[in-house]
Image (cartoon, rainbow, N blue to C red):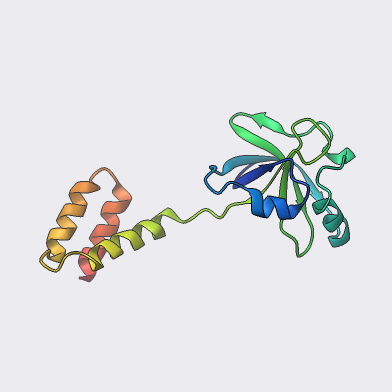
Length: 154
């Protein structure tokens, strides 16, 4: 099942600690497709999360890439971080990742525009700043709509 979830992966981690601490933050998060879901108890999850390189029959033959998405097994338990495991055809956690929060573009864009207007040089009027931003973002309908809303509030 294709999802909008994106995850950053660590190659051959021994434990969940390595997943959390050894992921390269500059590596782009990957879009994933959940191939199989495995629900564990908290005890089973803890054992799995601390021995990711051990073979598990429910991982065998799964994972890999298809249609530009990484295929994964979603591993979850109550009160635990959901893991996304790509065994790439093996039966252990060859690549293990956690979901990455995706920012809401419109909120980020609105905040950035508001910051630019609030922090403009004193000699630049808000009208002049709005005109300049309109020229710079003329091809972005969402940005123009935000500028219109800001102009009405000024």
